[in-house]
Length: 274
Image (cartoon, rainbow, N blue to C red; front, top):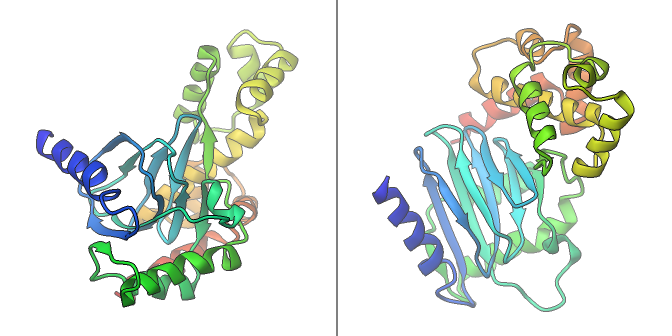
């Protein structure tokens, strides 16, 4: 563990921001390394392959599935934790420029289309500082420049962190019972709330309703199960409390923009292309 911590400190603190004008590149199979709370002067583009990466900020927990990337603005404190030792994380760190597009000022998770995928895979052999005006710097800058033009859907793959301890207990209950159908009225009764007061608590603390939180959490769990490739789509649906596969598929599509079967097929295409 001490060795892992040293690696993180050396990498993030000393290398990323050492050259203020460079674009920093780092690709790595993370193992079980937990990257603790940190921030950097450069903005970060983190692309994941193979499994899920959890990115946590002060206010939100982001869920980054394979074949997606998260944009982390400069100066935003966060931690990173891959779900498994097989996750490949491809990182590009960009200096902040004057009069940048609004896209670069907010964190968000976006799917990677074929064009962006090929551009990211082209960086596979890079590591360390890409010096300004070098060919690799120009290519990396092109990746950044194209993002606002092709990334129009900021996926709701994050959940807010509760401030109220009572709400924290309720969310842990939801987490532990995702395989069951959880009714809001039952939750309110179980934890001693009226439905009206619990609704207000969700809106005040999390800025979303119970059903919104519950739906996103179920789909996030479904993505994890799909990536494990141990269960069929029907079995995954049942594991996250859906008795109807079409209902599960439609909900999955509304959040990710693709059906569960298409998501799995896309991951297989990626693996064949390596």
